[in-house]
Image (cartoon, helix red, strand yellow):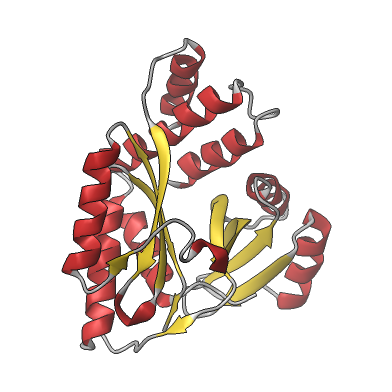
Length: 247
């Protein structure tokens, strides 16, 4: 299974610097509140999606006390009107893009997302126009910045954990471990017992095919695609952005 593109690695490194921003906590908080409302349980041992979201919160350096307060708030039945909506389209160079949102105003969010696509040379499409190219998987990201992890040893531990596949990403200094949806946190916990540092564990949409685009930072398509991703991810209503762009 192919690794993530350079854009994902840039985003991951940028996120490490921006973790203190309240915006990150706000987005994850929305996901947790909606997850508990839809599932009916605030117990991560029962609600596996919640378990992955808690792992995501911790990997973003959100304090455990904040997470506990949020869980208690959700258990108390705090009202929230957020609904999930997914927008699909094509970015510059024909890159397929999926945008997952939690919003209390669909018209506002749709207008903003459409504006970003139009501004940076993309096209917002109809439901189903690109989603068929993606499949939902659990993805745990293991730190390998010093590149000292033995491939043979890691293979043994990955098989032991129940992982479906993995990929050493030398450019990003990480190992991407793939598993079934809602299993990323469990896989990450098993790998952590062997001393690996887990950077994140969550569900992601993995493309079946990739669209290549120039990695030259002066290239117009590359610049527009990067700006499109940055604008989408900076929007409060946007929870996740996935694409099949490959450098």
